[in-house]
Length: 106
Image 1 (cartoon, rainbow, N blue to C red):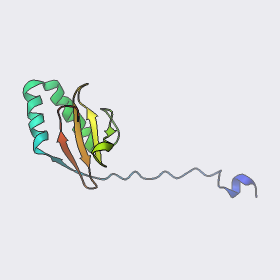
Image 2: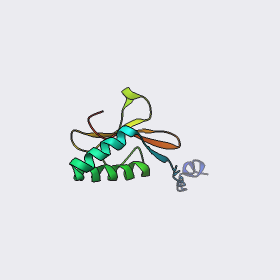
Image 3: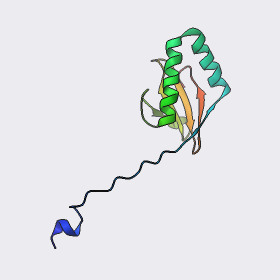
Image 4: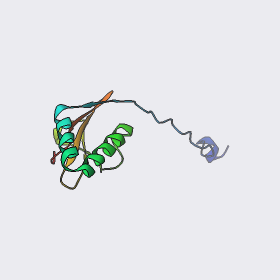
C-alpha cells in the first residue's frame, strides 16, 4: 500500500451541501422612515436599498455593498454601502434579519 492510498489522496473530496437558512425579514420603524425618505428624495438610492435587501436575504455576509461586521455595536450587526456616505445597518439572527437603519453612517 503506498502513501497516497493510505491517506486517500486519490479520492476526490465530497462537496458539502450548502445550508440555506431561510430567514424572516423585519423592518424596524426607523428603517421604514429612512426608506420613505429615499423614495421621496433620491429614487436611485431607494432602488439600491431594495437591491441590497434582496442580496442580504440571499446571503447576509457576502455580496454587493461591501458587507462589513460592526464589531463595536455587538455580534451579528452588519452594514453595507448605499452610497459613499450612507449605509444600511442590519442585525443577523438565527431565524431573522432586522433592518435597523438606511441613512447616515452607522
